[in-house]
Every structure is written in structure tokens, then in C-alpha cells.
Amino acid sequence: MLVMNYSVLAEWTFKADNAGYYTDDVALFSATRRLSLKDDPTQPNIDKTGQGSDFVYEPSIEGEWKSENALGEMSFEFDAGGYVFTNQTAFTHGLFDFEAAQAFETGTKLSLHYNFVPDLFLGRNMFMQPTGEEAEHDEILTSHYWSLHVDQKLTNDFMVRLLSRYGLRNYNQPFQHRDTQFWTIGSHAEWEISENVELLVGYHYERGSAEHHKAAHFPDDLSYVNHYASGELKVKLLEQLSANFIFDYEHNASMSHREEDERFGANENIYQGELELEYELTHATQLKLGWQHGNRKLSTEMANVKNNNVWLGFEYKF
Image (cartoon, rainbow, N blue to C red; front, side):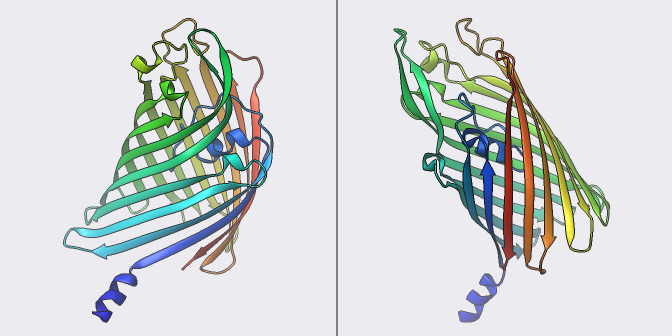
């Protein structure tokens, strides 16, 4: 019995991360950090930007269990972490992701994912009653999505992925009329160009629909169509030093049908760039230094919204 338990535990691997950030916009921080092919690029709708700067701490732990079976290799992964804000503590929240996957000898891999972000504070926001009376309230979002990935290796160096997602954005009172369901389809391609250069590109198409029967009396419909494209280039500069260059583009178009809604006919374009350096201290430890810059423009507003995040992180595998 003891031998059996040891064998199962031996198949687990873990990775712990610690990172410290400076952000010049706490309201946009989570949305910008999750703007990625590997995360949730449409999270969440932000009404009030420019809510101040802060230092943010990100602890996280990832675990992976692998086992051989008659079909190939089965695996289970979890990732639990969060963003801890030093001064504006209301923005502190957790991030949780789970994956179950089966890889086949044909080079195909099927994986199911569940992502959960509870009680994400978006800031203070104005709520307007049907009578026209306004009051300011905390706006809090809980997000879920489920995703299916189909990966296929075409060569030893080239892999394509097809994915679909279904998700829910649930808001607190009095913003529950904003509750949104969304679905996504997308494709990724990963290419190991050489021993020192890797490229990841992808595109997502997404539609989000608010529950119109709840929004019937409010000119505040969050329904949207989203196009998201990204490219990530990883280059090994030295034996122990690599650089990651990432560019993201996102276009959001409002699907509100009410002329009195401020989103009626509106669209938003987001451009974001990122540079991260990774230095391998040992085989099990890495040091990371990064900078991210975003530029957002809503068609109904004159000014662009810009924000920056910088970070220093440490990763340990065991």
C-alpha cells in the first residue's frame, strides 16, 4: 500500500510563482494581465478607468499529474493564485483554473478546462434607476467559463489547436441586469521555428449576450461581438536568457439595440504590447522581468486610455 501511494505521488509535479507588479491603473490591471491566448482576453467590461496606481503581489501554485493508459497519456492540472493589492485592497481577488486532458499516440490531445474568478471588484460605478435617479455602488463580477481544446501535432515542430468556450459573467446587485452569457470559437498555431525561436499565433471570435428580460428597463446592455488576435514570439538570446515579445489586438462592438444606451453603435479597439525577459538561475528556478503597455480607444470618447504594468517575478519547479 505504501509503495502504491508513493508511485502515485511521484507522478505529480509542481510549480510555484511569486511576482511583484506596479500598475498605473488598478481598474485595468486584471483585464490587461488576462489579455492572452492562454487566459480570458474578454474579462471584464470596465466603465471607470484611471482609478489610481498600486503595487500588486501575485502568488500562485500549479500542479500537474500524469499517468499512462491504453490510449496514451492522461493528465490533470490545476492553477490557483491571485492578485493582492497593497493599498487599494478592494481589488484583491483569486484566480482558479483546472484542466483534464487525454493525449493519444496519433499526436491528438483533448482537454477540458474550467476557469473561475470570484468576486472581482471593478470599482465604484453609477447605477441609474428607471426613474432617472442615480446612486454610486460597488460593482463586483464573478466569472466562469468552460472550454474544450483539440490539439493536433502536424509535425514535431508544428501544432494547431481548435477551441470553444462557454461562459458566464455574473454581477452583484444592483448591476444584475448586466449578467452576460458568452461563447467563443478560436484557433491557435504553435511553431518551433528553430531551437532558439518559438512562435504562437491565434484568433478568437466571441459573442456575449446580456439577459434582455432583466435589462428591459435599463439602457445598459452589455451584449457584444468580440474579435481578438495575438502573436507571441519567444527568442533564446543566450544559454540562460530568453525574451518573450507579445502583441494583442482586440475589437469590441456593442450589440445594444436601444438608442438611449450610451453603448449604442459604440466600438472599442485595444492594442497591447508586452516584453518579458526570463533568466534561468538553475534548472528549476527562473527570474522574470517584464513591461506591458496598453492603449484603449472607445468610439464614443475623445481620449485614448493608456496603462502600464511592470513586474519582477520568481518561478520555482519541484
